[in-house]
Amino acid sequence: MMLRKAVRYRLETTPEQEHLLSRAVGCVRFVWNRALAIQKSYLEHGCGILSYVDLAKCLTTWRNGESFGFLSESPVHPQQWALKFLDRAFKDAFDKKNPKRFPVFKKKGLHDSMRYPDPEQIKIDLKPQDADGRRLLPKIFLPRIGWVKFRKSCIIGGEIRNVTVSRSGGHWTVAIQTEKEIPDPVHPSTTAVGGDRGVANLLTLSDGTMFLPVTAYRDLQNRLAREQRKLAHKVKFSANWKQQKAKITRLHQRIAEIRKTVLHQVSTAISKNHAVVVLEDLKVRNMTGSARGTVEQPGRNVRQKSGLNKSILDQGWGMLKQMLGYKLQWAGGMLLLVDPAYTSQICPVCGVVDAGNRKTQAEFHCLHCGHEAHADVNAARNILARGLQSTAGHAGVACFAA
Image (tube, rainbow, N blue to C red; front, side, top):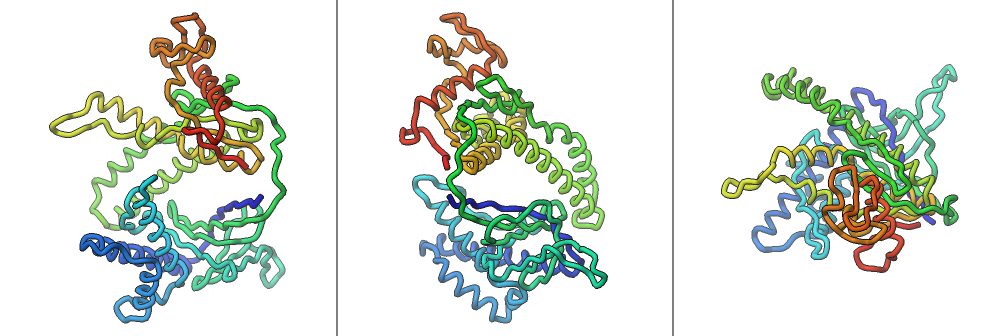
């Protein structure tokens, strides 16, 4: 089995390195936006789109010309990979079976990142010392940037394949992707469990285990609103405005980190104790669509639906599914996704499907046989049963296995 992992470290940059990194990601953003503008122009005139090879030739012309010669002051490989990512984004957008959203222009300060694809250019010094022999922070060499210190919070296991540098919450981080071949893992457990994702509880398992909901955004939304009101009273793009904007960004980053920490803890505990996990194949984007409607046909219960959407997105259902998928794969387990239809209305004893079986959010009472159970536990048991009865080859069932 080829095991691919990525470890992320926080960079300790100097002011000069901050400037070089900002300029480099700015050039990557410029290349993406200019190439996207060219592709959209071609589409508007009915000429199709350019291939990556054609865009790479354009990049060479830009770097060697006078108008965009500043691009040559930054590394070329991240700029080339920006074009590769754009080419992949167009292919995904035009995929007839599973189309994704059309690529959009990148904004300054939002998801700033760049990738170094050549591992031969990356060097890592894990035991640097000063002139007096004292240990220093580990360093990583980035082309056109130099040696940058980073905080090594975990080991780097495997052969380095690529490096991605990004900026988030005012800090620069480096993600090192590695791969190594290991024997096919065998999960130490033989149990299977179903899981029902919800709002009252993040996840309820078929064995009765319940994980408390993630309330990172709910806990900090009043403070976030207060800071955003302060921002609204400042002159846009002034020094005070930028300072307040950075404060709000750090608060959003804190919310995201709290959510990610909780989801890592939950997914790790489940993947270690169970070999097979079955979840509903939920379409979160459709579930959290706005109910506002239009002026001609306004929606109903808009405020209630907005609050429900906020609670769903605060749980991070998609991230939890992703974490369980790769952690079970690493451990030799399996994640199954099944059709979510009627899992909360089926009685596991008599098999009758009735919307009246679930009178409240937490209670399940079968109107046919009288079976009673916790509603979320009952749904998790139905999900497990549906997963065990199905196989990966059947329609409507997705499987992630080692």
